[in-house]
Amino acid sequence: MRILVMTKPVPDPAANAERLGPDLRLDRAASPTVVNGNDEYGLEAALQLVEKHGGEVAILTMAPTTGVETMRKALAMGAMRGVLVADDALVGADIPTTIRVLAAAAATQEFDLLLGGLDTSDGAGGAVTAGVAARLGLPLLSAAARIEPDEAAGRVRVQRLSARGYDLIEASMPAVISCTQALGTPRYPTLKGIMAARSRQITTLTLAGLGADLAPAGGQWPSRVLEVLPPPSRATGRTVTGAPADQAREIADYLADRRII
Amino acid sequence: MPATLLVVAEIADGHLTKLSAEIATLAAGLAASGGGGAVGLVLDPAPQTAATELAAYLPRVVSVASDAVAGQVWAPHAAAEARRLADEGVTHVLVGVTNDGRDVAGLLCGTLGWGILANASGASWDGEKIVVQATVLAGKAITRSIVDAPSAIVTVSPGAAEATELASAGAVETRAPVASPCVPAAIVIDRVAEAGAEASLEEAKVVVVGGRGVGGPEGFGLVDELASLLGGVTGASRAAVDAGWIPYARQIGQTGKVVRPSLYLSLGVSGAMQHRAGMQGSENIVAVNRDPDAPIAEIADLFVLGDLFEVGAALAAEIKTRRGG
Image (cartoon, rainbow over all chains, first blue to last red; front, side, top):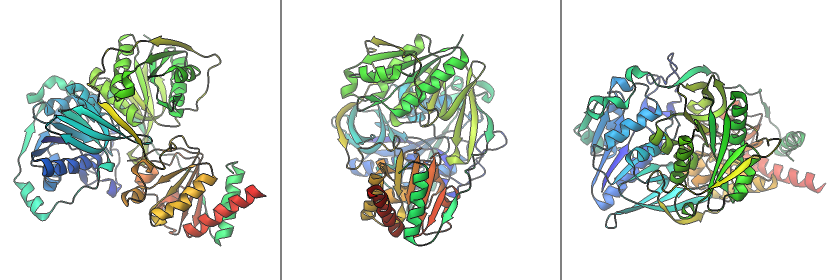
């Protein structure tokens, strides 16, 4: 199995310090950076598949050159090599450009499965992995909760999360899969993994190698933020203390006033 | 050239979803204010009922009966239908923030290269360009964003508009499906329902949520009882899902479902930012927690400081008493 996992460096949601900068773009210096959560679930699933079936897990990242630091975290988990697309012309890239560039970069690699997150915790657009499938003309198996490849048959089955549970879906490989938390908890890197990651190869690609026409000139993205507003403040609530029975009555009164009961 | 908006509708149990009705209303309003058109797309093995329902909100509905989507995943086929309508003049495609909706948005974006504005909670025009309002960074800010191009894709969050029927229903036009999906469509081998996942969290008027504080799967018995008494649906925080007490399908938050019920009632949920991103649009927020410093206190209309089992049981008894009296 050759599995390529798209991993995006994002502000660590646990630090809770995400903010937009004066240019109305995400301020990437404001927060420590981690591998996007849904990408990490995909990476964990990929590592387990390769442990079982043999093969290789590689990671693909589009980021500034500082993205190498976050890629090392994914390599420390067990990914064997990395491909970084870094180009000044991609700073602040919009979704269509991100899709085009990642698809072009993925096309330079050989893979049976291309994994990406269902969405990212910073942009939260949830369109990139599907978009890459469209650019590559490959089957899309989205919202994966379980991944079961059958190498002999050249097919892969995925449990796809649905409103009621899951759909069991199947397609031929190579295929693109979008990954979710339901795949299971990612491993922590071991000390040995961290040491090994230092010497693993990260190949850097630029737009010159992939196609300069993939991105509009001068970072003139058609999609842009016009203004940032503070979140609406809620009317100040009140705290209810006292004996449980009295508290329950107060809740019931509140609900009755609003015709909920 | 005036804009033409396309609403890619979704169906559950043969009927139009509430979210699709809201998006249709948003699109009809945009078409009216921008002097353009709005059309809905229904794609299903049996689309008639939902197409008729959608026509209550939109002047024109394209209804496509497709046997293929009975046995294959829906989004690549829906994206192909949307692509055909784009070739016929649709300039803006609106989908819901759902797994299927986001797949359609991504597939279309990869196919057409149009810009995407995600998670819209409202939309308006700047000339002939669409401007979208969205909550970003797990609720830390609201942005107004534009796609500076004649065409765009918009993913729409629940509650962006209140579904409102037109004075007179629109026309339904039936069509044969496009020959092939926009990428090879995966086949559906089985559709599996998990226990407790029958009711839709996103559509529920009341959501009762259990967090780490409920202590274990048995703690959800009380959550379920209150949900049932209030005619609502059970949800969970990520901590409870990660602990394996309840399926992921019940998770509310940035990496789970986004809900906007008329009542959000939580038991033992601390209210981390990741969770708040999935519920802060709720109309009324009542939270029971024994920790006075729980972040959910900041956004609760009623913050009940106490033991969730005592307060929850007392509330269940109080509701039963009032109903019986």
